Each structure stands twice: as C-alpha cells, then as structure tokens.
Amino acid sequence: MKRLVMITIWISLAIFTAGAIQADGDPAAGQAKSQICAACHGLDGNSLMPQNPVLAGQVPGYIAQQLAQFKSGVRKNAIMAGMTQLLSEQDMQDLDAWFSSQTAPPRTVSADDLELAHTGEKLYRGGDSEMSVPACMGCHGPAGFGIPPNYPRLTGQWSTYLEDQLLAFKDGQRASPIMGPIAFRLSAEQIKTLAVYMSALQ
Image 1: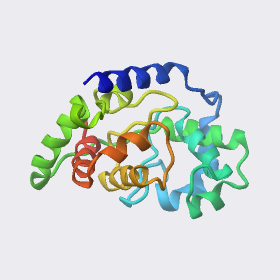
Image 2: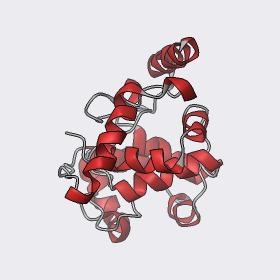
Image 3: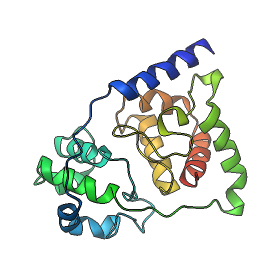
Image 4: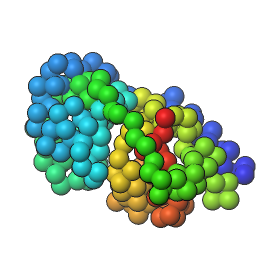
C-alpha cells in the first residue's frame, strides 16, 4: 500500500513538472492542413475506425507532442512516421489546435459489457494496491478528460484503440516511463475492462 501511495504521489508531481509544447497553433490553419488526416481520423478528428484514435477534443498540446514523437521515431508507427516527416513544428501545433477544439461525442457501454465496465471502474478509480497500480484518474481525471499536455483525454475514445495502446505499453512496443510499468502489472483481462470503462466515461 505504501508503494502505491508513493507511485501516486510521483505521478501527481509529474503532472506539474512535465514539459509542454507551447499551445500557439492556429485552428483555421490546422483545419486546412488536416485534410490529409481525414481518411484515418475523420474530417473533425472523429475516427470511424476503432483501430484509429479519435483526435477530437484531445487535451491541448498532446497531439503536437505525439506527432513530434512519430516524426523523431520515439513513438513507432510505420504509417504515422511517413505522415509526419514533412510536418514542421508549426504544422503540428496548428493540427493540435484544430483537433483539440473539436468535440468527441460521448460513448455508451453495451448491455453485454456492463460487467466489464463495472470491474474497469474499480481499477480506474481505486487502482490495485496488491499490484502497486495507482488509480488511473490520478492522471487522467475523474471523468477521463485528461490533463494538458501530457495526460490524454480517454473518454470518447474507441475502447479497441485504448485496449491496443495499453497492451502496447504492457509489452514495451510503446515506450513510457509512467505507463510502461503500470500496464506491465495489469493482466490482459484488466486492460480490457479498463478500455471498456474509460471509453464511455461521462
């Protein structure tokens, strides 16, 4: 329990000390530049494909950060690596400003997934002291709206995408000094329950 408290405190401190990309993008310019993104992410950032993330309503600064990581190779994705190579820092900030200003519609949990969501809620709000897993809401907020610029919005996201990313953190395909150790301690079933619950947070 003591270790869990220390992890929670460390993450909370990280919220205030993590670096930020300046949010000085132009939404109108971002809209014009986003046309190339529409095939995978939708015209307004609301992807119609569960494997592609919803960008609409994301916390300001986060999309620009991720685009920079794709471009540098810190975050691995063959498609996004190619898409970002010609983007300038200003392009990234403009795209960030456009997508973060859009609205992601709320999602609901299907009747078949209610039990999964209930289990996921316990993890999201209370963590797992036995496995030293802190409550997810410590970084992503009680309603899953995230904390700019480093802790992304989760609510409204596809549960499939959330599950895939947590699994990627778990097996090291996606690197993160915070999410890597947390996801590593979660079982595949726990990850699924979290994804279902987080997607439909209100």
